[in-house]
Image (tube, rainbow over all chains, first blue to last red; front, side, top):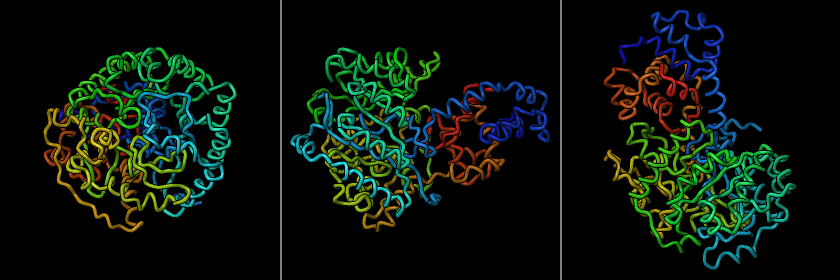
Length: 91
Length: 466
């Protein structure tokens, strides 16, 4: 594992990227979200500097564009919001 | 109705008419002798409804979710009762995508499409104005660009599909930039021409070197346009793009043994095509009929047809079957057919021998052909084996998975090392992970989406390293 960052720091990044409810809590109440994790001051500063607006942008905009169709070669959920190929197999 | 046992979304490309106001140079519709016959035998509205009822029966009996309908033609709006049919699909809760021509997008038709709530409308541009008009008809380029704006003004997602041929390659990137920068298109995609129908008359040919160069440049232009702030969805429709991502350590075709296929060409797995006379094709670009509706039913065609079954089995592919990209690629059998008259032949444009990595060989794992419908259904459903979706809540509680993902998101070099050889990486790092957990991590970190991973937040971290 990368020795320059702590295991808990990686864990929080992992949680932020996968667990939407954790991410919401993180941006609403930072200290509460990181309580109990073993983080250095530098890591706390790094986490505090996360840009909530950019984060939301990725959540909202990229999610909208993400492929949601199992029929597509890169599928996802079943809402049919095709985008990765943005077409069927038709020319 | 309890839909919990239903899997995936399955799509049908439905050519409700072959009536068309264009005669494009590369169109697959004008196969020798069949066009007029198909036109004469266009299905009546009652037959369309009968097929929809059959689809419903198939869904309920076998647990498939046939949700996406790509309605096209010819120009689908030239069929007299097209609105009735679209409304019927809507009433049945289906998602409707349409592919047509700009000429019939009148105010009245646009209003209907907007009100009924189609998902998207796709049109084609095959080059800059002169080339495109030469392919299709005079004035078509301007009409298409204008139609994009009309669609957008009514809140209908509009996309451009381009067919790359040796004829239009010189201006392809100029077209791509034009669509992204100057039009109201929400998306741009392209695919390689399949030399069937009118396209068989195009005598120039691509080489694998050409395709590798074009695809490499496409990714460069795409990334530059995104860096410049353009938001048009620029798609990587061809599965061959994965070879470039693989070579760049940004993708790994890592898979669980029990998955027959997880992405790649749709053929035989997640879609089929119905043409105007009810004939069923594995893909519209592949002139091989696999059934006839409504005379036959979906069940016997999709679960029983021998050609479709072959497409699900690696042993029938001359080259793809022994490639480790089989589960995520399978090339494009229609392009192969156009060149070799055999969809299972070696893909003449695959450039895997030209990438830096030379480890794409994989042993063929034969799958028996003499299956029951139940067994065939299970095989198809393995395509939808979505460990991400099915076990998401479980994975986000596993600290070792989260910790590894968090660390790799924040360290590009480690991420590349992991994606090169995921199993070796966790072994070397002494991380105790199951294969499905490794696969989940690979899917999440891959530079392109595969295996139904659609969580976008990773892009925040990948683009905003801490």
